[in-house]
Length: 289
Image (cartoon, rainbow, N blue to C red; front, top):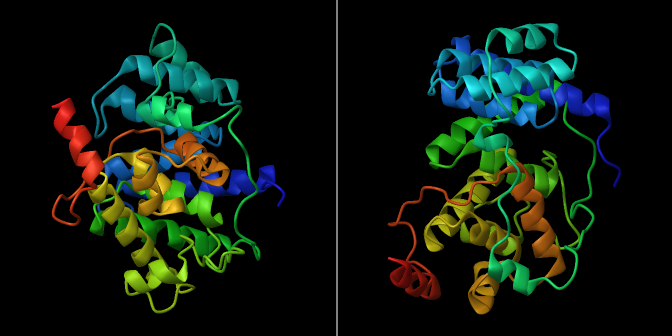
């Protein structure tokens, strides 16, 4: 499958920024600076100058997060390099030394020793696992983004993580179907769909509920370890338990790497009541306390 064209990426970034503006300025939504920041950051990873500018403004003015002139200056300078005259002017007005980026724009953390040991040679790459049938219309994608954010809140998941999983799984195509019969936005296989009471995996809402339910369960089972949860989403928690870490499968290693490029945080909040923890993870945690 060919990569999305630059115009398609630019349009996607524009839609993310527009959604962020609505949350930042309470235009049709309850004001939510965290959501605005997450949407701007997703667009900034696509090198959108306006997203960088708006993020910088939030840091420069402490809008919903601690004021940080160093981060603001870095974001303004990057916006300026992408052609934003306002970004270039603001970078001169708000001084900073060196580069300082927010967590969501930093390079992924180095892989764990277990992951390195499991991988022989360069990290393998694979084609996207799904067959795509064309992207939904812009208005549909905008509604989808709003739905994902709302549902992520219900499931107490970081929307950035959910967006990263959907991008890696289906590239936001609700009709995506893989050769292994994984279906929909979050690519549910029939067994997982049945496990989480999904009757129609190609229904976007049902698919999101099933995928988020599984992701929430995995985070509880692996006690907030994002890498283990992602590996299990791809290969199953049984495979992760057997290998006591990321299984040394080329597809799984590449899958985890792709999502970590979009979501580099190591830990995620979890509800300990949802799942009994993996036995070996419990032992590991006991020894690290």
